[in-house]
Image (cartoon, rainbow, N blue to C red; front, side):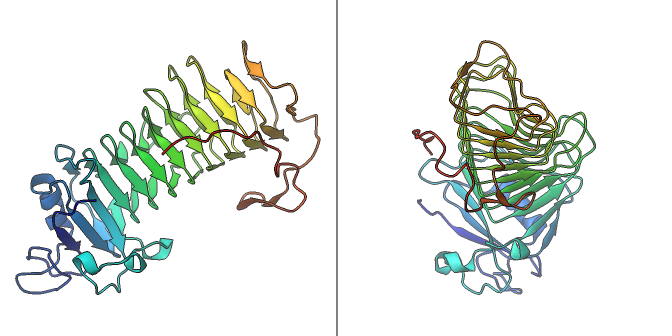
Length: 343
């Protein structure tokens, strides 16, 4: 990554400076939220790295840097760091990052959201809001180790609305009243916990909204009304995920070429899958309905069953909280050997 300049944002800062250090007074005072907004909207350029200290940042208007972009070799980075960090600029190391939930900077987006342009990297941030979206990204972005929560009233709204070819890794996404994630073409969704989207009208964990060649793998989708939905989206790969609770696992209505492999569907009130095009080596247990739709290619060696047919519990360590597989689980080493998604 080619670096341009470093900026430092601190909720405890007196502000008024250029953000070049953590200092609380003088010409080099760190930025406050208001100064961060001005910088992102009017001055940020490719290669800038913005470190944000743990604290509470309350938005008084939308932050919109959608017209200011990074590049593939010089993305714009916004990285949360611990409150006790004293290192600055290039001396900030991975140990300074706010990896744990307890020390992630919190952006209060109760009324306003954050929009960024193309080629941004956002790491270690906690955002909660009630607007159309909490975070809206342009194309080719990375969202990693963030928590995104939208408690807006029920409508077609999202915690994260991602641009094309965006990667979402190691995040927690939820939304009590609307949807967690809108995923565009080329998106990669890996190692996330997507849960408690329970609204009776919306309540989608992942909505594949546009484009093709999406990869969704190694995620836990827990207690969403509909875990994944898609329409007119082709060549989506869904593999090695755990779907637990909620109502519907995957609903794909008109797209072609979806591949759904090596997933666990457990304790759903409705159908694990509906209208899929290729389903192989999935483990389906204790669900109320099984409906693979019409014109599907099903590996007949795979166990498919509804609520009345049981062949073995997947043996989660603690169903509902710890979805690792206990010793003796029939799911261990039971999947197909496949070439995983790239990126």
